[in-house]
Amino acid sequence: MKDILHDLTCPQCHIGQLQLRLITYVKMYGETLVTAPNMPAWECDVCHAQQVSPEAIQTVELLISPAGPPPNRYQPPTLTHKRKVQPESGQPRTTAPRTKARAKVKS
Image 1: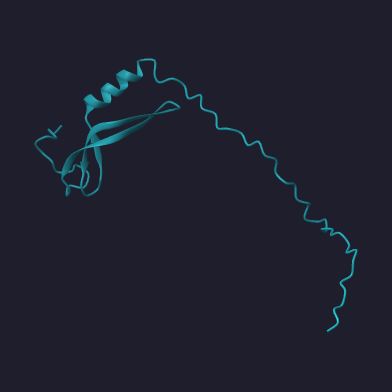
Image 2 (image 1 turned 180 degrees about the vertical axis):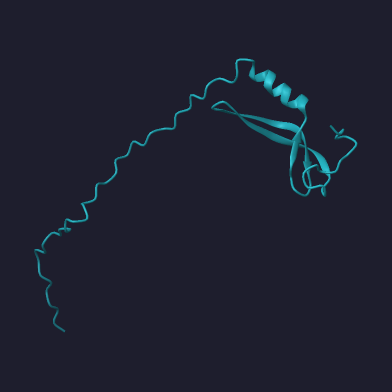
């Protein structure tokens, strides 16, 4: 494996240069989404490919513990409002009959 500190050319596009940036590391562990903000990574200035050091990933995995992350217990809220029921397409809509006729205006 090449030493990334000496070869700053992007291994993906072979055009861009890698720059050290702080990123948010996001990974699924089982059914749980784990995010780690402000993680140092090398990012290409052309294709934006990112490489996180194995030591940084190992730190995140140590924080999660050998048993894995806690299960995702998030349940989205249920809708409490009722939907209006529309008549079936085969039934005609009924309208209330007019009770008063319009008065003619004399000029």
